[in-house]
Image 1 (cartoon, rainbow, N blue to C red):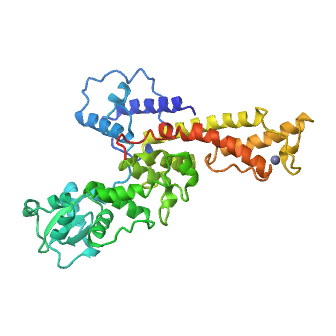
Image 2 (image 1 turned 60 degrees about the vertical axis):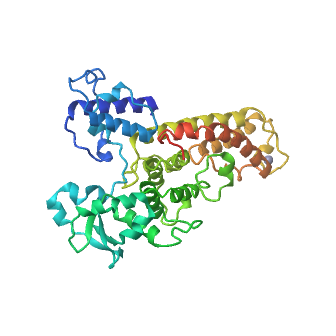
Image 3 (image 1 turned 120 degrees about the vertical axis):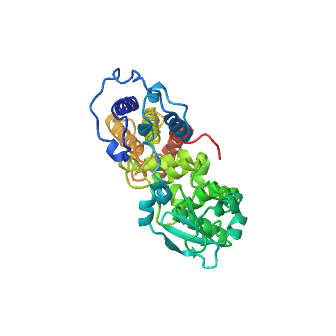
Length: 412
Ligand SMILES: [Zn+2]
């Protein structure tokens, strides 16, 4: 389907939702994918006499900030906040539903359990993340960052309850993230730079480093991605590991990695992370598994971007094969040893070579062409070089504009 059509359908759906769902309940993305009946464009575009709530505008601004695009056109302004916020990230954790937010009843049901490592008996402050309770030493933790110092300040603790003899405060961080933060504070040499990190630990470190101001840690983490998320063709060719393979086992879903980079604004890595996500194919891109759900605009830009890249590479393949520059090869085992006479046989060979290249465009365009079984080493190299020039010129240079559109504005 053309991108314009996808976009038009999408706008129709948004208008429809904006018109009928004044108090729409946010549903998971999977359910919003159900096709809706056609609604003529001119019906819902008229104002329904209600000013846009300021929260809706904030959501829109927040969204566009994340997506790195300019403010949406008027078509978006009529849309209810609840529908605009549908392309949210799915990195939400249980910490988003802390007892304080859900009220007393649920707080009683969610009795926190002690963290197995960081419930330090001689600690003096308790921190509750979701259902996990940490007990820590406030002087040690405060010493590591000014933001943690504020969180554990005397004035904050003054109002905190003391259910088990220590001041207890509630954090919105997930228990997993907070445990990694404490591990970093309490364990010298963690994280060990130069060693492969498991993605979940990497993600927790990146979130916590940004949130609590450990800028050197964030810098190191971002640096460790540079080889695997190249921004230059030469760097891509020189890379030993690419994309999510830079993380330890279990390997994360490429969408999950992309979501983290979008959320944490690791801007340089977004185009290649998007490309890696696109390699998984359509069903992988639209995955509904927790953590893999991509924001709608990112998804739309990715599908459109890959479509464009593939179209360009198919055109390039045709021109490489049929522009008459492929010489007759002296190697007898090489398919290109067939000369122009008879013409039919030569065309047959060229068609085969072209179909390998066209097929490639559906696959990982950046990896080598599988021409080995067809032509000799020399001819394979010639074709590969010609194809590479197109890769570099059309694909690589276009990655940031075509696949980086879902990214933020700040540079890293
Ligand atoms: Zn040859």
